[in-house]
Image (cartoon, rainbow, N blue to C red):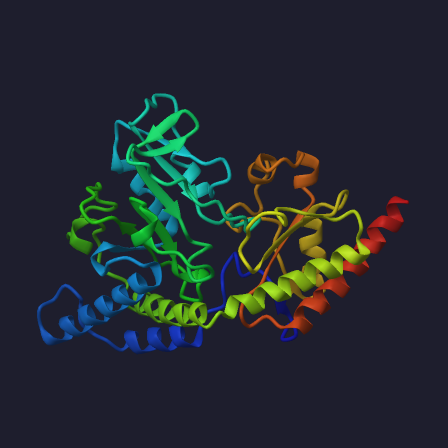
Length: 356
């Protein structure tokens, strides 16, 4: 098991050493961050430093960062943002946004548009249309608010909440090498939202509950490291590896379809279809060969469901069922990629030989 190669960064990135160290140090703190004594103030200061680090990565004000248990909880703001309004969700958005889909009573100007900046399954980037002063357009509907899911994009491509014009955004720590179970809702200053959780009034009344100090510390440390990587252009090297992977596979597996490779994508993501070879079978065979890959979003794995995202991109259900996602990170090496290609191509040849 020690020789395994991890190529599923879109599901979760490996925990960064900086995040692990910050969490261990935070666990030694005793005070409740809502307490006014010295121990409590120390915990509060750690939270606020982490809030600043997350804000710097996302490009917003620290006061606009609301810590949550993850991006899925952050997305639940759609339920209370405007109870009488509908939510328009882009057809390639993550399931945590589709859970709030309701278009039945939508009138122009009375809806919230929810969309993903970068798709977790294909890596395809879909920048939201700019607000022309009258709102964001969704087909014939003009939406008066915009929520952007930047979970996969933040830390991998340049993006700033400040210049995006978005009303809200959702982010997750474990996609950037922080711990699981912590994320944030970014709320544009002056925007009223219903509390995500009622109780003691933490997070300025927007999300009650004693803060998870250790997880927040890990999130802050991961955000600092991710911003440094981005500034050092580390993801351009990852993109080169992604391109080597696709070129190597395409040179031998001629029937392979690379999804979205003619569109702007995240630098680390490759989604490809091998007709007649089920994606779930590919995942199991690669797992046995020592590689961690995925057949789609981790939040959807193991579920029998319509391949919504890939079908929206023009693939048939039969093709979508044969998709595999490989996602890389800054610690991925060229040797990792070439070893995967060798293993995958060996299995692919067997599939074609049996089909002949």
